[in-house]
Amino acid sequence: MEKKSHSPIRVDLEKGKRYAWCTCSHSSDQPFCDGSHRAHNATPSMVFTAEETKEAYLCTCKKTGNPPYWDGSHNA
Ligand code: FES
Image: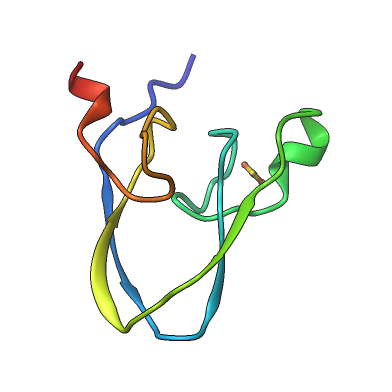
């Protein structure tokens, strides 16, 4: 079985642009949704709009208390 990393992924967000953050962990394009949740009958993506252009760390363990952003919850 494939071992999945729980490390956050750094992304460059662009103000006003919409992103689909993967909530199910099945995407091959982490931290973003690639549509794989449909084949797994899993939870759909969480769409969000970047409020500013910035570098951000997005959660990949899906346990964050502040989705889609990394908050260190995987270490808890
Ligand atoms: S593939 Fe995970 S939410 Fe779409």
